[in-house]
Length: 237
Image 1: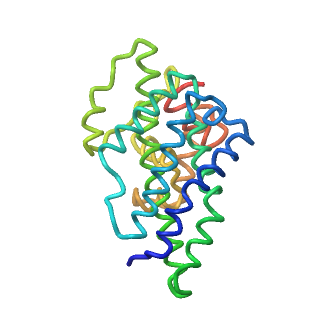
Image 2: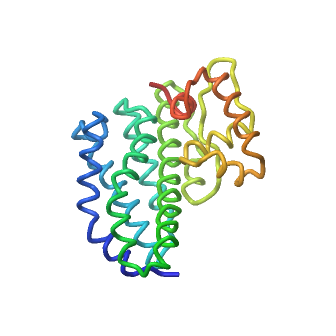
Image 3: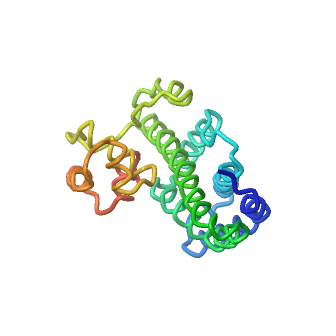
């Protein structure tokens, strides 16, 4: 189903969304907005995510592409080189979503009453898909950059991943500590900003099992939160 009225409003409001996003990032003193060398790519990623939401409302697509993956991978590498933690990228996604709320609520009002809830759900799904795929690609880029800076071998599978082949991102769980295959799959879901129920559905397990894996991950990594676990697994502070 298409929602052209909501799409048109959201498209016209993109500059306002980006301004609200930058203001919110500055309020929490995120380096993504405070550093002039980081903000342009951060802005481009945010705009691309909102545009993906517009595309889903109009029935266009696909949302994910090799080009978007490659750019997000570059962004992750760039942030690693600037010493910006992965946690900042994860936090920025939630800040962007919150900054979009007033505009989203106004956009769906341009549709007929019966179409507003489905339009809102579609925007939410599109946002999580777009932001999640970009977060994951960025984490891969970040992990590759930190591995190379530690004289590790480059990840030759990055090219295959950019072409759409599913590959696990390099994870640094500490000396003598290794994550299991399932723990890595759960953590990759966390890095994509997925909820426990979404991770469970994707992996075909229960939410209780996801929580158990997360507790094991926290213990192995010495992490205190989801963001902390992603940051410690995919890179270093």
